[in-house]
Length: 326
Image 1 (cartoon, rainbow, N blue to C red):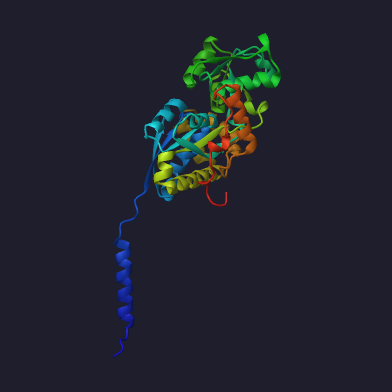
Image 2 (cartoon, rainbow, N blue to C red; image 1 turned 60 degrees about the horizontal axis):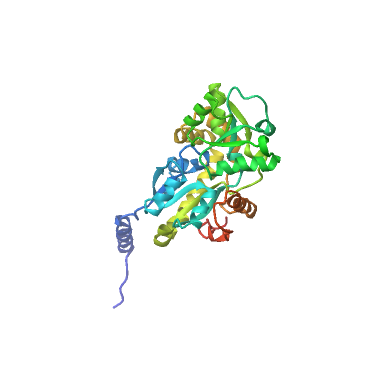
């Protein structure tokens, strides 16, 4: 005898099915431990903006943000298995060559405008030429900031007493302000917010953006640990998707982004506002590595003698986790 399903029976069955689906627990978000080499870098702010706007959560991720006092300390954490994703300078790719278990997975920016040279209130002159023979603060020997000073001397052809001299003072804004105030250094290599904050305090000014004499370099970069790539490659893809969605959000939400950036970096809202206007257009929107920027990075490794021999740079980065269509 054929069975006939009534309208009431069908509706009840459908309701039961929907109820069963709704009662299933939602998939738990994947947790990623994301490290910043230093908190003060504006280039790392999309992480904070994305967290505040719920963008990473929307991509099924729970983010634990960890701030470090430099890329070397963060690399130690990667080796120890305590960091999954790292936000650091492009030159940290040299650590991949030296055995740190991670690989560069996306470019944050290849614009040298994200770096600047700032000076104290007693500094006389303007433009690049005013730095001839001056003492310029850097973070540490063998760092990106040292190479920026070396590149300045090379670009200007300065030799002997004409050369700008790199002086290691650390990277904190407090140390920079103090060193400029007492005349330990004449200038310092750092982020644009430092210069804008000095101007606000009437304690100095931004002299030049490093783009005044540098063309392009893989400056800030996202790295993923080998462990997270092996255990959860999809989480890496979703992190990068969330990152570039956060960059896009920043481009259309200036006020919100400036507020978040000021809280994250510790700089004033005014300094961050000027920085936003100066460098926001320099963020990569797709994460791809530019050949010219990688070539400059290779040159910096050779100039600083960071590796005993030339290396195949393609072994230090990959684009396979970038969002589709980028």
